[in-house]
Amino acid sequence: MLHGKFFHHATAVLALAAALSTNAQVVPLDSVVAIVDEDIILSSEVRDRVQQIKTSATQRGMQLPDDDTLVQETLDRLILESIQLQLADRYGIRIPDAQLDQSMARVAAQNRLTLEQFRDALTQNGQSYLQMREALRDELAIQRVQQGSVMRDISITEREIDNFMATEEGEAMVEPEYRVEQALVSVSRSDSDAERAAKEDFVDGVLANILAGAAFAEAVSVIEPYEFRGGDLGWRKLSDIPSMFAEIVPNLKPGQTGKVQSSSGLHLVHLAEARGIERLVEQTNVRHILVKPNEVLDDDAAREFIASLKQRIEGGEDFGELAKEHSDDIGSAQEGGELGWTNPGQMVAEFESAMAGADINVLTDPIRSEFGWHILEVTDRRTENFAEQVRRNQVANFLRESKYEEELENWLREIREEAFVDIK
Image (cartoon, rainbow, N blue to C red):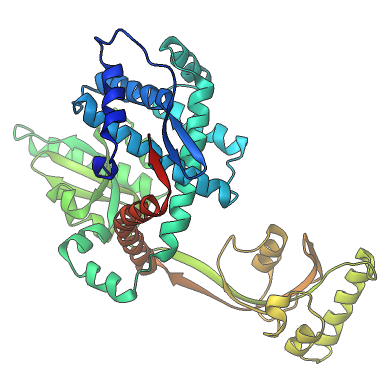
C-alpha cells in the first residue's frame, strides 16, 4: 500500500479529518480536494470512502489508524484509482453489463445469497445496490488495466521453473493429490475367530461387487449383516493421508478400490480422483483441405469442388500439394494442410466428430463446418501424459503471481509519480 509520503499539503487533509470527527458540529460544503490529471476528487468522495472503511472495519472487528492517517491513506487510494480509471478510459476498456451482472452474482454467492437477497440486504443496511454495482465496474476496469500493464512485462524462464521445483516448497506444490473414500467394518479383540472370518468374507464380497462394476458408495451402503463406517477424506497430499492407507493409495488408479487391514478393522479404500499423477490426453495428428463458399462459389459448388479434390487424392495426386494450391485455411495451407497433433475440444464440433470417427490414413467424406467444406485425413493417434506439463504450468503461474505483486507496486508508484496531482 502507498501511504501519505506523497502528500505535501497536510492542511486540507487535516481539515477533512476534523470534519469526520464524531464531535464535529459543522459539515463543510463539498469542495475539490485534489486534481488528478483530467479528473477531480471531491471531499465528499473521501468522506464517503472513509465512512465505508469504518463501517466495514467495525463489522469485521478490525483496528484502524487515527483519522489523520486514515484520511491520508484513503485520499491516496482515490488518487491511484482515478489515475487507473483514466488509463482504462484511454485504453478503451469497457465492462459489459452482462459481465458485471455475473460478477455481482458471484459476490452474492460468496455471501451465500441470491442476487435478489443480496440487493435486499444492501438496502436494509442503507447501502445502494446501483452504487455498489458501479463501484464493482470500476474495480473490474482497474483490474484489466493492471493485468494488461503489468503482466505483459513478466516472463518466467524454464530455468526459474526448474530451480523452484527443486526446492522443498516447489516439491510440496507439485506433489500429487488424492481424493480418497474409505469404509470400515470394525473388528474388535473380543471377536471370535469365526466372527473375524465372517467379517472378512463379507468385506471381500463387497469388494468383489465393486470390482465387478458396482459403485463404491452404493456397495458400502449395506447394513446387514455388518455395517460400514467412514466417508470421504477429501483432497489430500500423500503425506496427509493416514499412514494405514498411504501405501495402497499410490498403487490405485482413479476409480479403483483396495482392502487394508488395521487395528480398527477392515477398510475398503477407494481412490475417487487424483491430481498431478497423470494427465492422459488422446491426441490426433490430422491434415485437411478447406474450401470456403464465396461470391463466386456458392455452398453447393464448394461441396462439389472439395469432393473433386478428394477424388483426385484417391486417384494418386498428392494431398499436400493440393492443400497448398486450393485450401482456404491460410494457416495450414502452406504446410500441406497439416494441423499437427490436436487435443480433444481443440476443433469445432463437426470437425472433431469427423476426426474421431475417421480411420487412419483414410480420407473422410466432405464435412460442413462454420468455416466451409473440409476433407480431412487422420495420419496417426497417440496418448500423451501431460502431468509434467501441468505441474510446470502450475509452478509458472505461481511464480508469475509472485512477481506480479512486486511489479504491480512498482507500476503503481510509477504512474503516481508521472501523473499531475494537485492537492488543494
